[in-house]
Amino acid sequence: MTQQSRRPNILILMVDQLNGTLFPDGPADWLHAPNLRKLAERSARFANCYTASPLCAPARASFMSGQLPSSTRVYDNAAEFASDIPTYAHHLRRAGYQTALSGKMHFVGPDQMHGFEERLTTDIYPADFGWTPDYRKPGERIDWWYHNLGSVTGAGVAEITNQYEYDDDVAHQAVQKIYDLSRGNDPRPWCLTVSMSHPHDPYVARRKYWDLYEGCNHVTPETDAIAYDEMDAHSKRLMDASDWRSSTITAEHVARARRGYFANISYVDDKVGEILTVLEATRQEAIIIFTSDHGDMLGERGLWFKMNFFEGSARVPLLISAPTIAPGLVETPVSTLDVTPTLAALAGISLDEVMPWTAGENLIPVAAGQPRAVVPMEYAAEGSITPLVALRDGAWKYIRCAADPDLLFNVEDDPDERRNLAGDPAHAAILARMKAETDKRWDLARFDAEVRQSQARRWVVYEALRNGAYFPWDYQPLRAASERYMRNHMDLNILEESKRFPRGE
Image (tube, rainbow, N blue to C red):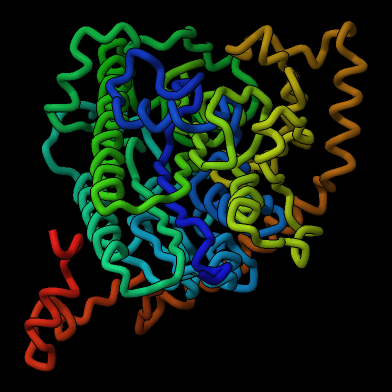
């Protein structure tokens, strides 16, 4: 047996906008998530995992590359992910893996593969520059694509939605791929990434999942809404970006929105169960990773969606089930940046050639009790007027923006982040230390200039490419009908036998 054939298979299960505070040690006990709970029992459970950036495209590019948005230049949901940045799919494929993606990864630009050998679906979001923010127009709200609170006021029940249509297909294609992998037609180890759009808003759920949360005690936020005039500067900007003055949000709206969100966690759980059941039925073993790109505030502090560094938005679940990592709770703060170096370590792949530019760390030692360096985060997309950065260091979270007063929280003592200690003389030393750490890591003026340059270029390019003939970058899944099922260039006897698993039973 070759070294290549001994490398472990890898299954990555990713969801969208799943609040990590609901996973203090696997799914909260009141969530109807039996499949995720079963997976958690055999996984290292990273209770304090943070996104690299609380927005889809930047978070995903960072997750795949182990680099922060300031390095990938994926600042927002319309920034191109350059094809020369290695991802875990590149690293694994280079080492002999077959790599496939079913679902969302929000790649922007003409490269829609980024190391994946095969994509089983198109993406749910556009691949062009149409969603580019503009720092030259602070406070401008771009109505046709900015979030608004209609997701909250419109929460409820529906049997089919745009997102259900998408995720049903994502899960179906993943299941079919796992069946196909079992046939053994390709001797290479495999890495399959399955990325669903739920429980991302709109907060609309199928009746069978909605009914699971009848009488749920968690449909009211744990913390009261903060009055607009008392919010921090960035939260005010996010409120304005969501056009909050155009909607009157009632307690019933909040309860229904949260109920719909919880219901869609149960939908995701069902799909995870389908995928893992087929993996087991086909007698395949794989390292399994479950995570999300970012969280959702769910009405805490009066905020919804993401785009900030508060716990609901920035914290995500991270479960790793692997033979070399002992199951159990890990409370050390870690990052989604760490997934790529961890995958490389689990697969026996060296990242030495790119480690100088990689911000993530191998989590195998961390799961065994070793420390991890301070966890960085960045945000430079809609609702901001200049980049924001943050650090989680032990109990402390520090948020810095050149346009705003500093924010400093002791997350262990104050998990709701209601007491900003940045102005407290008793914590001046902590503040100075955290500020010095951000100075080492970031030149905020340069970061701002780079974001502005990127935005300005993209506004020009997008308008140009929309004038005249339009050639879309959106990925078109390739399915050759002439090679599916039974065709006349195939031997029926060979075909039926080769497509069967298991054989001879």
